[in-house]
Image (cartoon, rainbow, N blue to C red; front, side):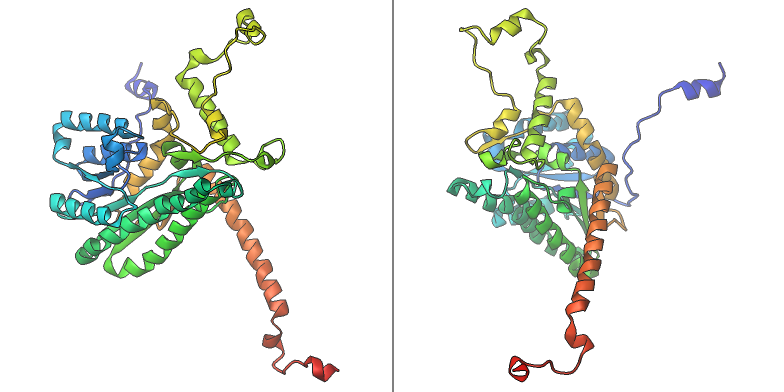
Length: 388
């Protein structure tokens, strides 16, 4: 076999993230350091020689709640890797608290002298139709909590880092949202509206900080990336919005199906064998145990329920890979895109939405011209008294 044939028979090498060239290591500030996307990104940039400041919610970390165990495993790997140890700083950060944002940025500057790239990725999803979110004082409070987490937490850290970047006349702010910042999704109304809000904020901010050489980028991942890798909270469903009554493809039904699939991947032995006589008889046996609720059933609970998707390592890695690749390629780039949509499906969906919006604007202009009498007729119009 010739050398050429041997080379062609080899499996293709995995494509590594493209890091823009730079003269000095960058300092990254990751607001939600315990999320799967942030951990994967931190591994990439640390290996590249950059510095990382990772924010974690102190209460979650101390009580080992949420995704803190994944982050602890990452810290163990950092301790074992000599070239990483001096390049990572963990700071307490609840973005909803302005004082913690200011203290975390100050600690980052004290440790590494500056912040080059800020990644605002704080996000949580509230699942429920708009009317379902108005059932009780608890569900109404969730609406405010959604904006405190998804909007104000990102705004607070941006405001804390701006003076540092402005003084140095250099910096790059990246906010990780989703195509839900373009596309309304039934059952995720509050989540979508909070993302639209933060994107409007960033679009306006981009013009204000451009004279200071501060770049602004919005990275829109597919809906599943942010929803499945962060906390999701579901409110009790109303009968009127169940699938049998309402044919709209509500997010609760879609995500319930995804959670059940993930549950089966994690627990393949828990899937009943429909061909087994024992299993078929168990449903009629008087001693049969009640059906245990699946992971997807939790989203239809009659109480407010919060959970994290049980993502197996392989699924998690493939889910976030493209987003992490985009962030490493965009971060610190001299001429980054103002908005980057991750994934072909997302691009297609947004294109269709923009096409529809463009057609609606043309109709709006046509109707506006039709009723704009003053523009076509400078003469004063007759009053009712004149007609009489």
